[in-house]
Length: 100
Image: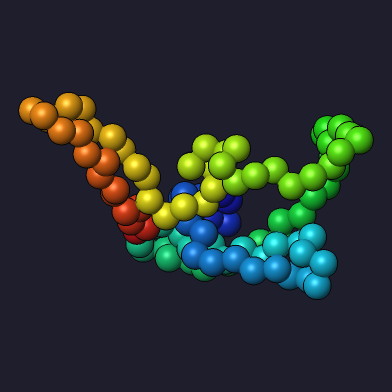
């Protein structure tokens, strides 16, 4: 998140897209959260340096999706199990609602 370059308030990402054909540069559109300012600006995000490279392995394969936690799979809802309510337990799905 970048602060607003005009008033210094917090901002939110409105949208983003690839800025080049290789997908190494991401163009992000931000909007100021200060209603009196409401500036909209664009940033470019790219990798500057690598901190840690992946370790080479003999068998490099695809990691099965069920090896990841549900929150790491990019799903739009969370499963929250309820405690034992009288005689049955249920799973309730709460939809994530965008803030703002």
